[in-house]
Length: 318
Ligand SMILES: NC(=O)c1ccc[n+]([C@@H]2O[C@H](COP(=O)([O-])OP(=O)(O)OC[C@H]3O[C@@H](n4cnc5c(N)ncnc54)[C@H](OP(=O)(O)O)[C@@H]3O)[C@@H](O)[C@H]2O)c1
Image (cartoon, rainbow, N blue to C red; front, side, top):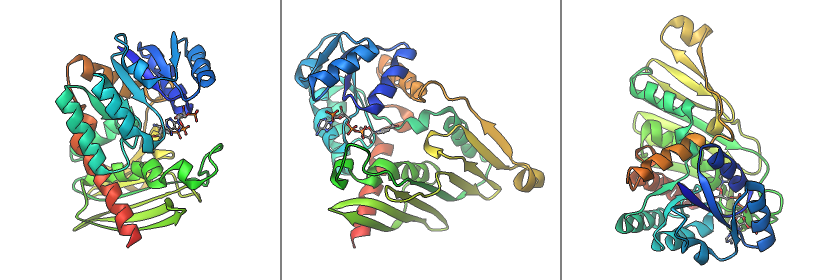
């Protein structure tokens, strides 16, 4: 499949390398400045570098675009790409509100184009196995999810103000929230707290209430919070080792008293390249099959998670 890349930051570099390794052809790259676009093109051997998104979206030799710009720009860029007839893979979060996410999927459906948020964690072989095993009932009914992602590195170098780094909930908290949705679904109530600086959340935590079940979730750009996660059920639990959202190792505490308490099963998967290959292959296959969504991270899941993100911020400001 022939790709165009929008944005020349670190994540674009990592994804471009995995795209090439998985057989994708990158035909053009857009950057805000020509020197950066040119430098990116030469690093990845891309023929066309441009500062005009319109000219990239008009290209007949580009089937799909990967968007990796700051979150507040996603909705506008995705609209431009869909309106020009391109399929789109857009970095997380797809947009900065559930209503924008909903509108983008409606637009993609109307245009008959594929759209997916790049939730690479779902395609990580470790999660493919863990989700299958939980679905098969190995842990029994799920009673809780715990996940946190905190490092005191926000905003990242080069971004001096919190607003330049964007919402830490939408940037990092999206991973713990997504994990809770996979194993427990959308919550029936949310209790949340956030630290807001210059109008932007920089640290936060939430309890998702599901009646008998619950999720404890935390994220931060101002302090370390354990980078692991766990999902517990009637018959045991799974711990997902740091960094859980990009993890390769889990321990399954289930099956026998020995396994639960003394000798949990270690499950380990090899990371392929920078870790985006499985998602990129899945997107390629889905587009080639004519699908408009990927079943593992479809419109309904993406919008439901975006609703929880909105809800957390609303609950935090009460
Ligand atoms: N999946 C993952 O593992 C992962 C990891 C990190 C980030 N992300 C996601 O990737 C996306 C990019 O994040 P980032 O922190 O890497 O961004 P970033 O470095 O600030 O920017 C990435 C690119 O967007 C451009 N850009 C900056 N401001 C822009 C604007 N107002 N309009 C259009 N383009 C703009 C930058 O241009 P300049 O170079 O000219 O500044 C750069 O080319 C975010 O959605 C983030 O959540 C995903």
